[in-house]
Length: 280
Image 1 (cartoon, one colour):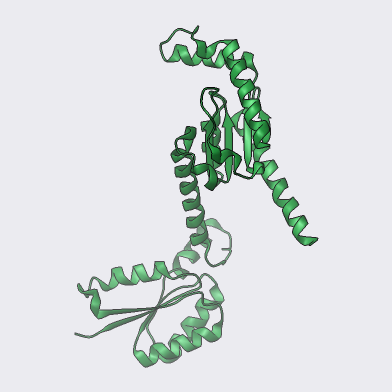
Image 2 (cartoon, helix red, strand yellow):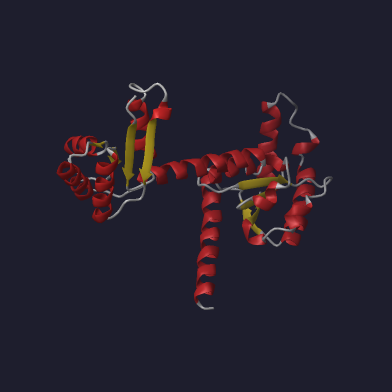
């Protein structure tokens, strides 16, 4: 049986071209052990294309390529034509079609799909992190989080965690209750990445009453009483003072507004660190 050899050429990793080549080869070779795949990734120079075409001629290989730059595609096509090497352009035809449909030029920037994929997976990882370390379920998450939220019940810790997770931040949140000692991890982290969420007793009283009613309970439970809320806030103030973290009043703020305050603080901190590094 004649051996089939592919040279996979890409200005990125080359995964797409290899998958397509394997899919095509499987129609002729059920046993892919008779199919050879050699990747040439991150190809940026035309001189590299000349060497690959020469090598393909020597080894009787078929070149399958995904090159986003039109000049590189044209150069490889020319090299293969001169050496009578079979080559297949996977991106060129569809990019030309889209250019006509959209009436605009492509950016021709390598690796954009991979960048988008990595961005997507960072978001998913952050969302999973927020779920895993929501409501103090596992205090170990506090040490690995990008942002830590602390606050008493019904101060929007969970929705804020999810919102920030969609911005690719790993967020852990910890509820503060007078009867429960805060996890030791809270006092071990950098205070700059910790944010305390506080709310006015009157607004929280209303929120908690509505919550009790939604659960089919009476709204006069101790959970919603002003005295209990003030006790919880006093405990909160004691804990955040010990941590030394930033406190944000969420009384009249939407989740998005609170998130913006946190992100602004994080960015300021980042720029301050850059400034310090430059002056060392």
